[in-house]
Image (cartoon, rainbow, N blue to C red):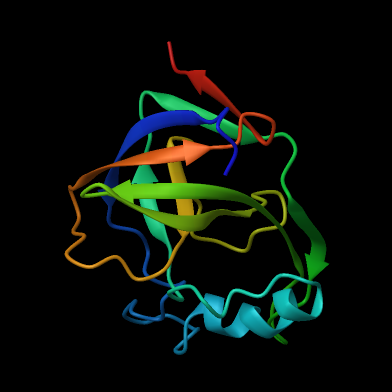
Length: 154
């Protein structure tokens, strides 16, 4: 990652657990990311080195907007029973207990998303498995300033 990064602190929050497939009563028993993996790979983004679930990181009081993501895939038909969705991704780093992990901001565009909407201050991150990471833990995120714009809620 470039040396000109934005660094901020975030807190790990519980998510809906549909990406990982751990949600109770989810229509996606194997998890959305496992189902989406082949679609993204065909489009040029291989997520096979990552844990197939998302870290939900609160960056409050900040909110964010992806302005120039590295990858953007319009109207991906990843499930036969649901409408296609648009996804964007931007490289990032997660720093936890002084160890850096390369990851990606995972951004299902709300205007095409079926459900499970996130608060504007929650950033979903795909990363390798991070040992001993728990809900409530603080970590640092390093973000590409050309890809993301941070705002502060008033």
